[in-house]
Image (cartoon, rainbow, N blue to C red):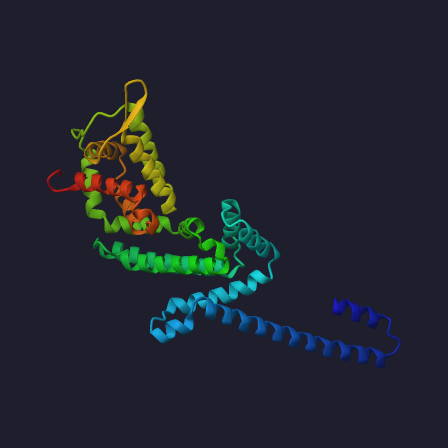
Length: 344
């Protein structure tokens, strides 16, 4: 706008001296505007960092000696995101909408989707860097394991620790930026959406490394699957077919939340027996175990060992004591039963 205004004035200038004066005036204006902008940015950065300092209680943590590297990461990411949000009218409006209707799941998800699909947003940009870092660690670990031929358990553990720290940083910053996301319901939604985005590109390599970790168990399970004499129980054809279909579908999912929901569906379906004019009753774990074992045997999915390990490793804490935790325990118990030395 400033350049256009001076361009017009320069075009109608009648003398070389007038043009020179206009050019000097334009240069001075540009320098002044740059200085004003730089000053505003410095003030904005200082305000954002001060807000982040208070938000994450840096002073208290410093005095108590429990300040971690991740606290500095959260502080910096929060400050950058705070500045970005103030310049984004749509995000600001969604934040106001969520403050007015904190229990509205649609608004919460729309807000999270806007942040986590915008590569220009500091949160998404940071998440992208985190994904690249984990992908690099996974590639190194897989390559080393394949080159030396040693398949020892526990290779995924240190990488899983980094992943959990990453997830914690992203979720805490999001909840600090938009306080209504801190409610119990919205916190669960935030965790689900973050897990969905984070693991979208990483799960195949994670499963590859987990299959190296669980190679011995997987080999035993595959051997049982190939043994045609193995028969744990007789299941209705439609029930066994649906359970196998769901088990195969589970391996295509990358979000631990969706995978756990799928596992719950399988267990619930197998744990319900039909009798007496379409009435249903649920069975106990002792009766459920052979049914799950039968489905695993007929599924021809030895890699389910790695999938179960993935769910256990990244199970959200709020799901561990619920039906998801029970369903996963039953799946793992079935795998353990099939691969125990007494059964093999």
